[in-house]
Image: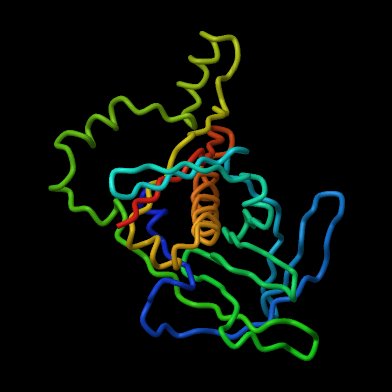
Length: 247
């Protein structure tokens, strides 16, 4: 799947998904490691997350609003907007985590599940807040595109020219030429995200909630990029700005 496909994954509590089947859970923090800032959170019996801080925004996040041929700019504190953003690289979970009042998680638990506080927000006797685990709506990926829709000859091109870093012979040739291995390649992509009026309305035109939503999606995308061979590529998307089109 490509970046656009990942950004089409929808977990927002403000997105209509019909009436999906949900699982009720009462998440709890089991441990907090002060040295690393890692939080161990029990979702339910036998399922825990090892959450670490995640970062996706530039320090000074530009938000541009376009309406009736007029553009309004304002700036958000990127660090502040992502201060509650956590991820678990092992399970591919990404959540916004807050603890006042009570532990609340909103985000993606896996490639097929999302989590959010229940609208009823019931409390467990131990003080936990009732949450729902819901199916994550998925869109078609690049893998679903028929072979007829692809560029002719692209497969032959990739087979003949693609460098496979796991190929020991090719790696040795490159190392001999440069004197050392060029891997892993460390790269980042600075980007802006455009949001149409329909999506913005689904967040009741609340920019803070929209930005938190995008933070989770981009952090989830970065986790997917981390599945590349670790010795080959370290890649991260960094959001520098958001463009909102208002009808």
